[in-house]
Image (tube, rainbow, N blue to C red):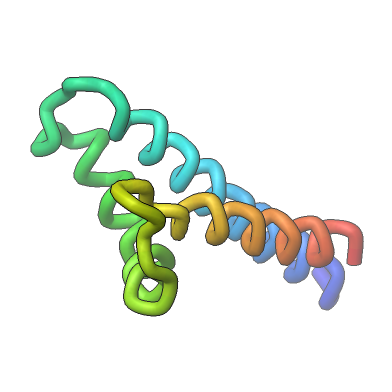
Length: 84
């Protein structure tokens, strides 16, 4: 496994985090138990990415756009690594 193989693995992990952010965003629209194991796992996976962005990017009204910006950036990075 060379550098390209490692870049592919890292790219797929970054892509997984992007999909986890998307899933967390979707789940926030539904009245579900916020203390459930699935939600807590998504929070644990996505908070290290979203918390720094939330400190920098202010919400627009009541809408938090940091998940959308994080997904765009993560998918761009992942695509570059996967096609490396």
